[in-house]
Image 1 (cartoon, rainbow, N blue to C red):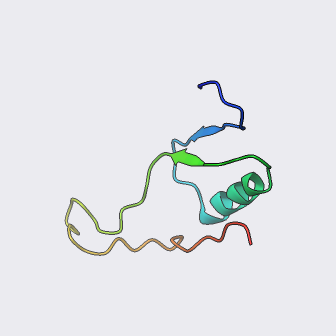
Image 2: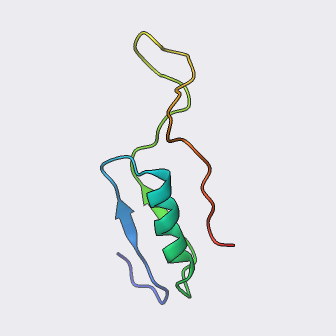
Length: 71
């Protein structure tokens, strides 16, 4: 990582995170003073199926939901 005067953290996931896990993790970062940006790199679940017999249909996933960060 580069030299910086503010806290830095890089999280690279190899698997999809549950919405509850992501929400809990981000809410822990929000309370740390001095954090300007948070970057998460990793897999993202597409909204539409890109290949296979269901190509073009909505990608229904039971764990997809909105998460709330901070107040």
